[in-house]
Image (cartoon, rainbow, N blue to C red; front, side):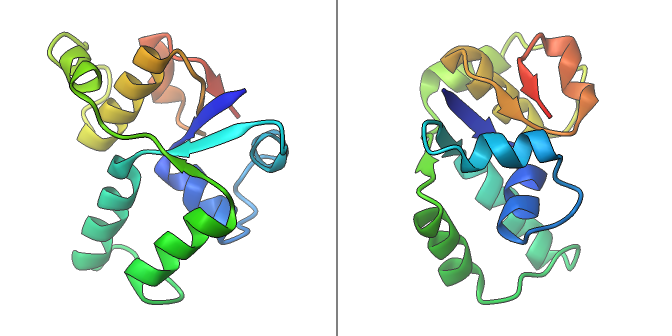
Length: 128
C-alpha cells in the first residue's frame, strides 16, 4: 500500500516519539508498504526551523535527506494535478501545507498518515 506521511507523522517516526500511534508506526515500518513524503513536509520543517518553532538533532539538510534515505521513503513530487485540486478544495483546514498534503493524497488516492482529525471533512483516507 502507498501512503503519504503528514509532517508530524514523519517527525515523530524519525525521532521515535511516543506520540506516533502504534498503528501508524506499524504501517510505516511494514516493508510491503510504500511510504511517501511530500516536499511540503520538508518545506514546512525548514520554515519552522527558521522561525524558531522547531529544531532538529542535526543540520537540516543532512538530517532530513539522511532520514528519507535511511527509511527508504519516496518523495511524492508536487504536480500541477495536485495543485489544481487546491483551486476548488474547501477551506475546512487553513494550513497551506496540510491542504497540499490532502490534495496530494486525494489525487493519488492514497491514505495519509496523520493524527489530525481536521483532515477528515475532506474525505481523505486517514490512517492513525
